[in-house]
Structures are given as structure tokens and as C-alpha cells.
Image (tube, rainbow, N blue to C red; front, side):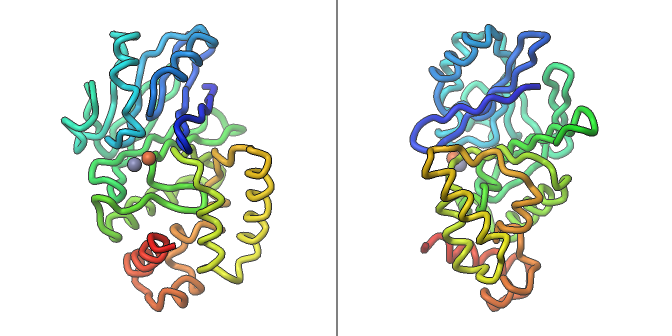
Length: 257
Ligand code: ZN
Ligand code: FE
């Protein structure tokens, strides 16, 4: 499975999954249709699936137009997003699986950013490959999604599930927010030298216009404050101990940043 990253709008990423043998493709969170159609033409691929993570317009905006071009394609989303995702046909919940070519994706129910948010995890096809996580607006490189419809404890629960995946998992998040996220991270996780090094790398990459997605889970665990509620440094800075409270305080600080 090849993954093609398409930058759209001001800071969104749309991901096209491509099965070279079968010449089929799937798309994760098509904010818009045209760049996806262009990519499919280049690949000479038929679009068979849309995998939506949640109902926000910058993730489902292209659904209708893609359905028009590929009437047989199947639109997947979370069961709690029923009536909120245009063209949705499959209503997924925790533990469900989705098929694409010879790969099987596992569905995680990860409410917090929205109440219906799901993530898709494709385990490695062999030992030399990483798994691929499509987590929408749940984990970002260096950050996490805002809590629009969920509570800190829901989000901690959701992030805990994703944090438990193998360290080499690639994190295909839906926005290029990394630099800003790490600028915030530096203000709350001040003695983290891994974070400082990562910030320098990312600043360099962004100054050249290089994408910082996908990220790698192991690096997130070391540098993303929103996955580090159980570290003493972040408990000290938030003056909290309980995971949801540490996380909630951090999220509040980031909202003001
Ligand atoms: Zn969103
Ligand atoms: Fe978004």
C-alpha cells in the first residue's frame, strides 16, 4: 500500500492509499475533491473508498463530488457521525475492521475533538514495515485536536489507545500544525532536550516548505506534551496529577497560546 500525501486548503493533508497491483485507491478525509481526482488520474486508479475520521467540513468537503465521479465507492465513518458525513454508507465502531486491497484496517473510537471521531490503523504487512495510523484531528505532530465536543477524560482515553500502538507507527494526521505545536510544547516541557532538538529540525524543515507529516509515534511519545500527562515535568507545570486534569490544563493553556 502506497500512501500519497496531498496538501490542500491552508494546512490540511488528504491521504490517498494506493494498491499498485489492483490499481485501486482509497482516500482519507478528502477536504476537497479536485486534487484527489488529479492524483487518481495520475495513478490511473479507481477510487473505491473514502475513510472519514470525523464530520468536520475540512475532512468531508470532497465526499459528494468524489461520489459523483465514482458512484460505486463506499463512504466509511463513525457510527456516532450518522447524518453528519455526506454520503456515509458504513457506520463503524471500536473494533470494527475495514478492507483495502490486501490490507485490513482496525477502527478505534477516539472521541474528544468531536463526539464521533474514529481512527484507522493499518498494522504492518511485514516486520520490516511500520504500521500506518490515520488519526484525523486526534493526535497532531507535537499536539492534539481541540476539544470541541468532548471532555479531557474522553480525550485522554482516546489518546491512550493510540499511544499504545508500536513506537514505529507512522502518524498521518490531518493538519500541518507541527511548528506551532512545538513552540507551545517548549513552554510547558522546558527541560526536554529531545523536544528542543526536534523543534530545531522542524523549524528547518518548515523554512524549506517540507512537510512534517507523517510523524512517528515513538517521537511523539517523547516530545508531544499531550501524550505525556504521566510525566512528572508536566504534572509539575500543570500542578495536577490525575491524567485528565493534567491533560485538561495543558489543553487549556494551548487554547490560550
Ligand atoms: Zn476537525
Ligand atoms: Fe481538521
